[in-house]
Image (tube, rainbow, N blue to C red; front, side, top):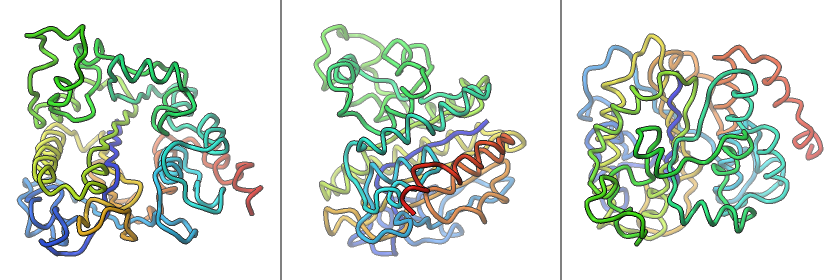
Length: 324
């Protein structure tokens, strides 16, 4: 079982409490993103190693790494910047959409009989947006839609078959959704550690699940020190729950990001810092030495599932070959 957790806009930065909120606030799982060694962090005693891998988000293309091209690489294995010869922010271009439609990780795995899902649960407002403006949706949404599986909704959230984007449900109450009446359990604050632990228990019938947390990127762009501490605390609690529930004999945790941002709040743009990749569990020791760029993660996932044909398809895909 692979738990693939995406943190938008998180790089590995230097030790600097004046600019790096991970230096100032992270005490455990995210401490190394603030320039601390694992020995300096409050981590539980674990039976195997945690790997923190500085990961190249440029993929051979100069300029600040961006979301659309980086996320395409993370979830298809095809380096978006190399295909376009530039970094693209925001929503995927026509070419990136074609790449995702054909090479979506969720699509490939399900087509091969490996049950996989994008487990973010969405409000009726966003689901309506997807129907009304399908060209203005994120890469993660496209990765799920390419698989033919539906986006998850609030009923899935009620049933424990997914997570909301802020983990704690604090944002849900601000949306003004009419069908959420006073006293609705969805309006109750969730404990992030409990959510992490339940994640490891509720998806045992899956081969891979993908979860996206994008508030980190928003914190970075807003240079928002006020909320950075809260977000880091929630994430560290979430990962504490995952570490507690994971079975290292059969489970792998992959944490990835598309570019740096939140690790430097002295400015509001993306950074040149390497993106953060964190590995723990089954196959982590082997995989760690093979991840150098964002495009290396999906091929390693395919190796775990013995999908040799799909590895070859990534290497020989028409989009990258036409760009060379």
